[in-house]
Image 1 (tube, rainbow, N blue to C red):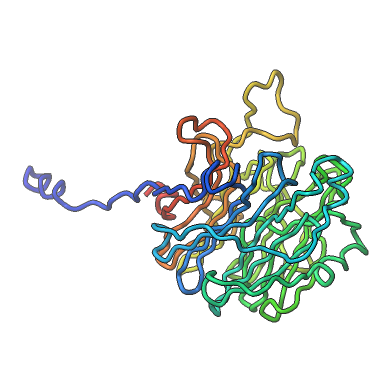
Image 2: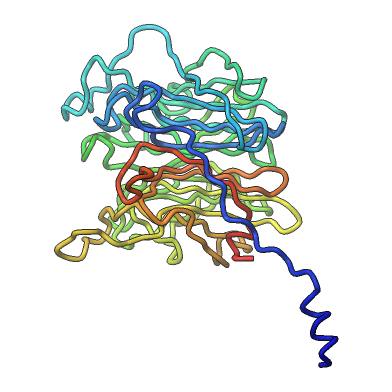
Length: 397
């Protein structure tokens, strides 16, 4: 190559690497009247509005204390945000879940709203499911991108009580994270159920779904997708996605000895679930995960969770199926519907726990996740942060 050709080659423009994630804290511990913010969820509506929501906990007493559900809205792709507002309020007296009282996990005066799940409908409507005291489930609808909501309607009797014939649950929980609308129009939400007799009144447990085929007016239960067995131990918080061919994939947390995510598939999201299988590529530190199908000319499947199986300070190797440190939340991308995972990239190296994923029309990926405090990123914190990045960034391009 001549010297002139070499100079010209060096002068040619090169493709710029995808920018690192933009991050903004949306909910911060000890602010707004709440001790902790946990259980994140995020969706982008048909009109492009981003809705970020969570549990706002008055204390650090855990899942059974006084908890509200808050939501924030963004009209510019997650750059600026409205103030938080409460989006769940059931009128009348409330009864505490008896299984929590039996284990002395709760104060009878506390009111616990839990596990908000939002579905962004292609019609422009927004659907919300949430739970009260882990034993009642309610539905609300917004037709103005989350500004206002219909009065909550209880769906426990129709969507959950029939399941007692096969699994005598005393504790129910939707999601968490987001639900989806299938190509058929069906609204679909993963749920877990427990008899409440085990640890924290959340165990033992099984996973199923609830669905609506009439735009949210009525809800029905699906079949149990992941039972509790010797191999699949206490399946619980799950995420769901629909592949381009219409297959519905359920990705499930459990306490199984494999410390890997459980995956099962269905043609309609409610029936004929395949035998659950462990995905060897997806480690399970026992933590909720994000799961998202991104459509387009080259559709991809995204997955996020703490990519870690270490336990700091442990004097011996952690027992199979036990909790591991929640850190190093990582996003993975699959080009073949989750059969293989082509690339992964860490979004938060320090403490980072629950996460949920959404995508904007321009391809920007949004992840709302729990992370450690700014002055000690290795410590637990009730802070929820929104990260904005691209699939190309995950691929390292």
